[in-house]
View (tube, rainbow over the protein chains, first blue to last red):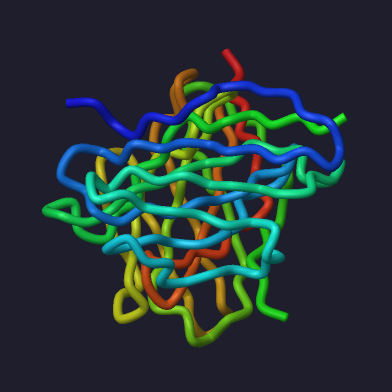
Length: 113
Length: 111
């Protein structure tokens, strides 16, 4: 049973560019959350998707947007990249019989130069 | 603003000893508290959770204690093993849907 899978694992962008990160939730899960984890810090909640709609959002600008597809997979898009967007982006899934427990993927490491 | 913080950024323990990792939280409306373990290069891994209507919960080798009076959360690891070396995060929220994480404690298990 595959857990949460994310791609790409690493990527490098330059300031002003746009990036798309992808996430497939754990089998049986229907809710996907995205977190940003800066080096040496705890993860920060970006937003959560359920039934293809954004349900909750943290304190992140509109440059951060997302999407959930009918198969429950999700994308995180970041526009007009800033140096401060360099971080590990974590996807977490929940739902189904797993209840409230969040299962995290290994993350996508974004470096903005 | 609301925040979750940890008392100590690093903790070193001898293999076989018990470990205690502490966490303070400030949002009295939080109903749900979780401990995560994050190994280098990996995503956070769920350890144990506790609801606000409880003050203690036990798992396999781990115990979480919640003191709502002083807004304090702790994780106790019994008979700490080398594989327990990692960064430990506490997280809190009104539900599991939106969690606020602390900055983490690096646990190092010494041989």
